[in-house]
Image (cartoon, rainbow, N blue to C red; front, side):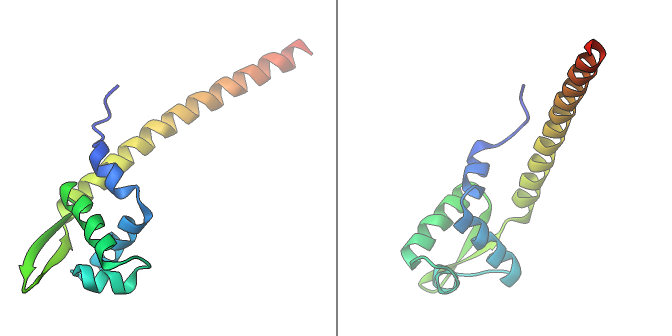
Length: 114
C-alpha cells in the first residue's frame, strides 16, 4: 500500500530541533544559522547541519547574505508535508475504526455466550 509518503521529508521533520527551527523561521520570516543558534540550545555548527538536512528535504531555501545565508521555509513543501500527514491520519483513523469494530464484535460474541 503506497501512501505517497516522502520518508526523507518526514525524517527531516522528525527531529524536534528541526521542527523548532521551522517554527522560528515561520515566525520570523527568515533567519541565519547565527540568529537561529541564539534562540536554540545548540551550537551554530549544529544549526548549520540541521539547516542542511532541511534544505535537502526541500523544507527551507537559502539565499546568500554577505558571509552567511538567509533561510526561509518553502511553504509549498511544508504544505505537501501537511497533506501527507493528513493522509496518514485518515488511514490510521480508518484502521483504528476497524480495530474498534472487531473489539466490539468480540465483546458482543462473549456476552452472547454468557
